[in-house]
Amino acid sequence: SHRRRRSMGLADQLEQSITCHAWNRDRTMLALSPNSNDIHIYSMQDAHSGTPKFTRVHTLNEHDALVTGLDWGPNTNRIVSSSQDRNAYVWEFKDGKWTPTLVILRLQRAATCVSWSPDEQKFAVGSGEKVVPVCYFEDQNNFWVSKHMRKHQSTILCVAWSPSSLLLATGGADSKARVMSGYVKGVDAAGRSTPFGADAQFGSVLAEYDCGGWVHAVAWHPNGTTIAFATHDSCVSIASLPNGNGTQQRIRLRELPMKCLCFLPRGALVGVGFSYTPLLFTQQAGSATYNAGVPLQTTSSGAADMATSAVSAARRMFQAQAKAGQEQGVSESARLDSIHQNCVTSLRAFDSKVAGNAVEFTSAGLDGRVVFWTSDELSAAMRNLSVK
Image 1 (tube, rainbow, N blue to C red):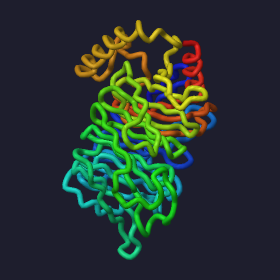
Image 2 (tube, rainbow, N blue to C red; image 1 turned 135 degrees about the vertical axis):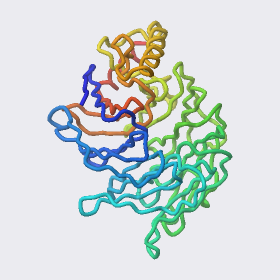
Image 3 (cartoon, helix red, strand yellow; image 1 turned 30 degrees about the vertical axis):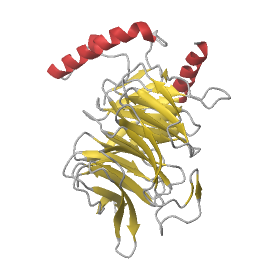
């Protein structure tokens, strides 16, 4: 498979296109959807010693329409998938194969995204029906059932659980980000506190933020009291809870909008999307505010001047798209400086070693690449920030 190293960025072209990806607990298996109704599972060998080698070991083809979301529970080793066929499946590995269990979502429209709660007792599914089914396993019936969160005015595009598994952040096409209570009686232990108190009624809106466009991504800080969301007006907003009435830091980007956000274990935020290079947002020393976002440099030329290269990069991007539309191979002159050559569709915290490098997170996109981003690249971006 096609590989190339630029600085430390390690990229693997696994498919023609990737819409979502998720890793197992020990980072040896990768689940992804190649922009179709299939789920491909790859095993990754030799990652610790040398260049990782990917082998496709399973194809899961229960869905009848495009797979829109995947999440892999690290403790139970279950994969949950959502699809435009209005279904979700929970996949369990038994006797050498992945077996699906249908989830009773009660949806009439597409499922758009899915996420396990950190305790893996529940998962949430975004939908085109203005509801979020929160699903849990019912022992007496031996299948997954759902309760619907209402209060949304349009399609839900993203969902994210708080570290406590009690709160759910949602973002949607009604240009609002919300924090809602995901407390399910009988599944969650009573009396556990959140920034909004304990045992808030399921589905109640605890915080709501007006945004300047569709909310493409939401993410929780590991502290459980900070959320970030990315909107189609090219902003990233960071809000501290329980302040639920719109007090937030809004960072206006020079780039195109972000499609995905991910907090790393130590609290830094990364985001990427329609501009193909991830940005790193970190808290300024001794302050609650975040910096305006530093691009993670992956070009061999190092830190090129972003302002002067932006116009030529845009020109090359359009050349690349015009070329790629006519023929599969893009000429080197039309190739972009970024490792990704198309929109990035998903980010995952990684926190493990690949080829001797500490990999912080991975990104996957419509160019079919999975890219490993190392702590060296994050440190270099931080140095660039301090130089400025």
